[in-house]
Length: 519
Image 1: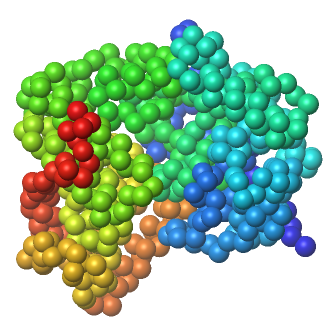
Image 2: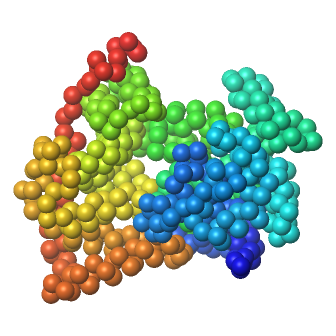
Image 3: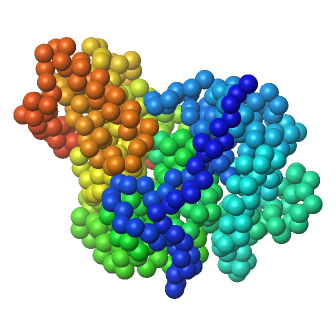
């Protein structure tokens, strides 16, 4: 019999912050003590209404959120024999999920199978279905009570009448019918509305989106485009980690959106999704902040406006299911070419950084590892230090790890990895630099460990293990990397030359994507 240690779940009993009413932002979260950069403000198990996106149900445990292909803790999954929708990595996760939420939702999923409820509907169903287990029932009731303090913006949705109010009303009515609930449609609609403006993107350990999560206490955190903290996940554990030192009594902020975009784009997204105008220090600079700068000219120049329209059209194709890795690369290269053509677009101004990210993903999917390595080097050396100047930022750390993994791949391969020899011949120029990939890998791991902060995460533990392993491999060859600073510096000089050579000039593929028709 499985020993269910329900008490192992973190209930956020000792947070280093408390909710307080603010003059202009509703409830906010304020530090109850001084907190150093990189420390956790709170940790809490995300077991209330955390659900996976449909596409991740097949490869990710629906309880601990470990996946079959991750580096930290790869798992084997078994499907729930009842609903055939969710999967678990073992008996403990299955039993915990059954006790906390799945017992009641299982029969709903089974009835609908092979159809699967949308992500938002599965999250609201968990809010409305109270567990029978005493421990989880108590936790669920606490969360439900706290949900009553969250804003819903139904009035704003009604006034705007842009389709959002119809979506939450239809979703509420539909889920009420599916659950055969005696509760009113208005109750369901209210929960869908609160989910729209209070939910978090559930991510894996590498800051990659995998689902949706709502924890009321965490939803008290207000927004700033210049935040002093961020929300992350370590498996089922949600944590709030500081990006810089926070004083006792200081309000804690996170960014609700991608704050690397220009002022107008940020304001539009915040107004559309969250119904407020941001007046944070960055937004008070208006279009004078770094995110809005061009090499010369303004966004009112004809060439820049044309590039915006072209790139928007090309990015719209990224969500099409029929897109292949090869067509994704052509689309992304076309978009980069549009920005290059202006002669005014810095690589650190969005959407350039996003296109570099997309390029790396496309090259990896096509097994063009040398192209991926070169673009990851460009991102690491010339983009991330500007776009994410704080080395604690999770996206910067994720990108650093991506480059480290590529360096490890090449350090272990005598021959070019499969795909490079036939698809990626144009990047034989990497060979002329004769990079010592193991030293690059070592230095990147060292950076990840040094910038991890004091709070323990399983990903940091993996970095430490890998770091020790690579030092052992060096020792077997009579080398002590700690004493090889000069050699490491030489490798990074080579890496800087590689970054300086990119991004090369790309051609557009207008015929394929019908840019002229769009314009």
